[in-house]
Structures are given as structure tokens and as C-alpha cells.
Image (tube, rainbow, N blue to C red; front, side, top):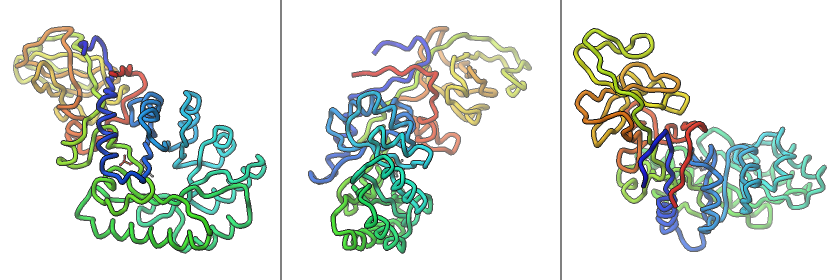
Length: 368
Ligand SMILES: *Cc1c(COP(=O)(O)O)cnc(C)c1O
């Protein structure tokens, strides 16, 4: 692939295909695959990712908010799309764009029924979420009777699926807790189906759920991070390929004398002679200030160059004293070898946060 000439996020669609196929290979043929493309496809570009996965045969998509779903519809994505966190202000937009809301409490259930009937809908597809321990969004187990009574009082909506979300599927120390969540969900689903008299799909696994709890795949799984190449464990990471590489170049090289400082607030003070490289990427591009002052690093010509001083809005400075490099050379912030997960760990965060934070200013390039 050509060397970077500016800051770019390269997206390797072949790696995406590999990850999709690897995750699919863990499923029964009858289990559907929902691809989670919220937050701009975890930073990669939701439209490109969704179009590509739609062609590969993804059954469903999910976004967090309604406007993310509208973007996909406008780009021609026709597969069903769940809006995981719909808000009443957007119910009309949801219906106009054939998006399928997650109904998670009495307020959204009632208000969505109202909007659907005002818009003359019948059997509008909705998804009912149950809280089984994450304590974030979802009805409680003892809300089933209430939900059923509401559903029986209208023909405006129809439940396409019931689902729950695991709180710690990547953490095998929490296996008992997770198994308990799964059992709770199965029992809720049984009661719900008995009472409603038809059989909505059931789903509860995210990526780590797919990998760690095959008994919980049910009718559909919802994968996000795995598609983008991370399996939340060293073993699982070996079977997946990070799809995004963040690259930039060296804009300028400086020779710094002992006692001089580098960057804002003079945060770095040189104890001896030093060579620095200034790079055209900063906190406005998604490399947060927490990566400054020696925590984070970049790769230049195969060597690690630590970030020195404070991260600026549009630039970082790195120490290249011992690296053979020149202005214009390519710099890797993360790629399939020096992974986003690894860089994220230098500041105690996770791959999810780093990759979803790469800002829209950074040009996306797709390798097909
Ligand atoms: C974000 C999200 C997912 C995807 O989780 P990954 O760990 O990225 O696979 C699945 N389900 C729900 C409800 C989510 O919010």
C-alpha cells in the first residue's frame, strides 16, 4: 500500500471480511448476525462498513441513535436497522426511515405506540430490551405482564425481537454473573413468548458473548468490536485482524539543546541533546492529552517514539533521538501489528475508546 502523505485512517475491508467470516464460523447456520455500526462504525465509517457487510450477508445492523440510522438509509442500506437508544424526540424520524426502535421502558413503549398509531402503522417492528444485570437500559423481569397488556391493546407495533445485554462477557472471572444473566434472560423470554402467543427472535451476545458463551447465541448475535478486529483477549485477538490503521508523517524535525523545553506549558524539559519530530495529529484528531508526556508512543521506521510534552490540538511531538528518520517519513500510530488496543492500554483505556474517538477530520481510505 502507498505510504501516507498526511494523517489517514486506512480501513482494510479484507480484514473486515476475515473478521465477519471468523465470527460467523462460531455460529450455527440458523443464528442471524447483527453488525453493530454505531459511532461511525466504531470510527471506521459506518456507511462503507454497513454497505460492505450487507453485501457479505449481514442480516441486521444496529446503531445507537436515530440520526446514525438515517445516514445509513440515505446511503442505500436496506437491511433492517435497530436503533439501540432511541429517544422520543426522534420517533417520527425513526418511522419515516424504517428504523426499528429498542423499547426499553414504559415511557418509550407508550410514546412509540402513540407515534406509530398517529402515523397509521400496523405491526411496526420493535425490539424489547430487558435489563438482566447491566442496569443501563431495559425493562425488568417483572414488567412482562405490563408490556404484554400494552401490546395486546394495539396493533400499531409488533415485537420482532426481545433481547438483553451482557455486562461482563469478556471477563471470565465473572462467568457466574454472566451465566446468571443468560438464565434470567431465557426465563424472561419463555414467559414473554407464552404470554404474547408468537415467537420474536431472542438475542443477548455481543462479541465476547459470541466467543465465550456459545450456549447463548440464540436466534441472533450482535457484534461490534470483533468486526473491527478486537476480541477482548490475547487468544481471541489472534484470530481477528484490526481493520483500521492510523498513519501520519513527520512534518518537521528539531534538534533540542539541553535545558530547552518542548510544547505548551513547557511540559517537557530536555536533560540533554535531543532530536524531536513534529507530527500533524493532535487531540482534535482523537489522540487525547492523556497520551502526552511519555505515556503514548508512535512507530517510526520500526522503532517506538514516545510522545513528549503535552498533546496539542493539531500536533504531537515525539522523541526520535535514536531513530534514523527524516521529514516526510511515514509514522504509524496504530495498525494491525502495533494495535490500537496496545496504545489504549498505555493510558488505561480500551480499544473501543481510542478507535471511536478518531475524529472526522482524519481522512478515511478504504483498501478493497
Ligand atoms: C455496542 C453494543 C453491542 C456491541 O458490543 P461489542 O462488544 O462491540 O461487540 C452489542 N449490543 C449492544 C446493546 C450494544 O450497545
